[in-house]
Length: 108
Image (cartoon, rainbow, N blue to C red; front, side):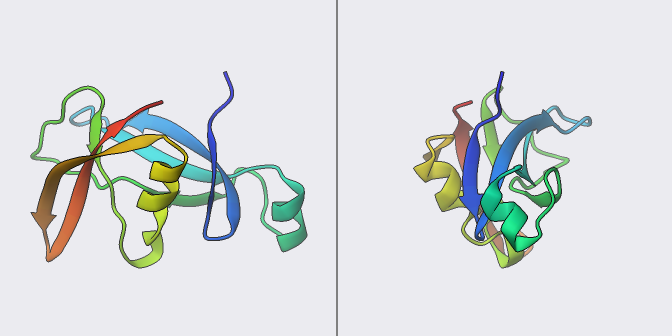
């Protein structure tokens, strides 16, 4: 099965779905795809681009739900994943450390 792809920060990325070991929360990681555009930019295939999720050690999430980190170097990852249809926005947020993290349903 092929991983879904998105363009984030001008880099073509494969989207990997994993799980944090401690609480089994979904972890979404973006790694550089092997594309001509990335090659022209000198971005190597497989290079980690970002972890799109925020890990919450004390929170428990339903099976297909996680929280997205969309600030600082990750700004724009939420929109990229929404546009690609890989996550769906909910009405929930988690506030921690002066940031709001959108809680999303994962669709892949």
